[in-house]
Amino acid sequence: MGKCERWGRLPDGRWAHRVTLVNGDGCRVTVSDYGAAITSIMAPDRDGSLGEVTLGFNELIGYLRSRAYFGCTVGRYANRIRAGQFTLDGVQRSVTRNNGGHHLHGGSRGFDKVLWGFEEIDESSVAFSCISVDGEEGYPGQVEVAVRFALDDDDELTISYHAATDKPTVVNLTNHTYFNLGGVGDVLGHVLELNADAYTVVDGDLLPTGEIAEVTGTPLDFREPREVGAGIGSRHPQMLPAGGYDHNYVLRGGGLRWAARLSDPVTGRALEVETTQPGLQLYTG
Image (cartoon, rainbow, N blue to C red; front, side):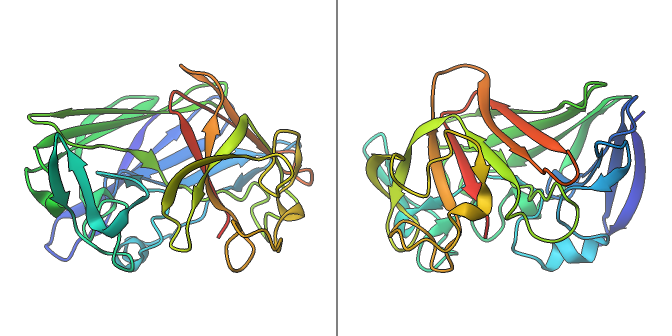
């Protein structure tokens, strides 16, 4: 049953809340109206013992101070926009530059820093909504957004997005939860499989060049299950300076389909991802 509680006050005096959804298996998902964020997922291991599998903060103040986007709903536009500029219907638009001269995750005050309104709440789900006004962070058009989190008794968490605008604009919504299925330590031993033959090539600022490249023969190939750590530290030019991943994969097929599977051999926990979207971002830091 959904349980709602006050969590903490924002600097302007408004209260932020947390809602915890619990299913028949004991799995618990906690979300907040601040940032429409997942703040906790408690999932059973192979022995039925619950453990935390996401990263975040116990207190609201951590989310107020952080720019790591823990668990939040990202918008208006997830990922980067080169030089904070794009052309729409022949008109060049400029949005906030908040990432080394580029635009990242909605700008200085993206959806992760918004106190969303409650759209609905019931025993198994909660929905939040917000309005992004025309010109906010430079984006054209007013956009009304709703995001719904629903947990069922099969341990399936569904995140649904809806956006409506009064004039042409760009919208790219996602959730930014960091997972560690072991609950402690690193994720290098986690086993990953991706439903993708290709990825979008990026430059030194992690901005897409427009090229789509095959994963064959690269450390980005997860078409067969292998440990996340197997490619960490690779000298491949597309890897992060520290050797990690921050890549958008081009998913096979269309409609709602399987995109990824991540498992932890130690605890037996596994995460399977399905999506209707054309791409999936793998980020390991």
